Length: 150
Image 1 (cartoon, helix red, strand yellow):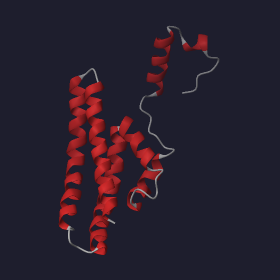
Image 2: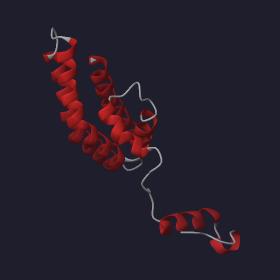
Image 3: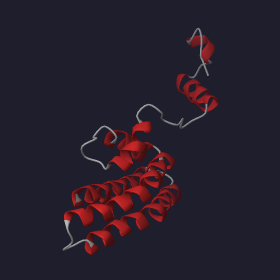
Image 4: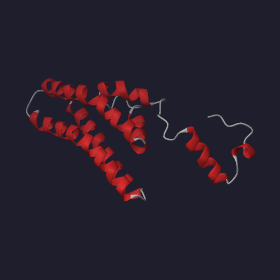
């Protein structure tokens, strides 16, 4: 049972790696730093709680360990999924990927993660998308497309 707690802690750690990549890949270093802080302010308390619980359940029965981890899963499943959704990009895609592994992730997380499979929030408004395409093509959309739905 404790391996699922390690999976969740690992997932939070994977998110930490993603926040580091975002920092490296962005041209605006302040934006990357802000994303890192946004992630860690929300994720570190959860990660730390799992790590402390891992130490506290050493020497306990499997049932006692499972009960301790289930309390954490109940508490942190929804906030973790909300964090992935708020952070978007890598975090959201990682959550979608994890949502396909029912045998790998605690059911408390799966309840929330399954909703992400076909429901990605828009990253840009329709007007931003329109402007981006027009700028890329260097021509008005009406000259290229017979119709453009927003």
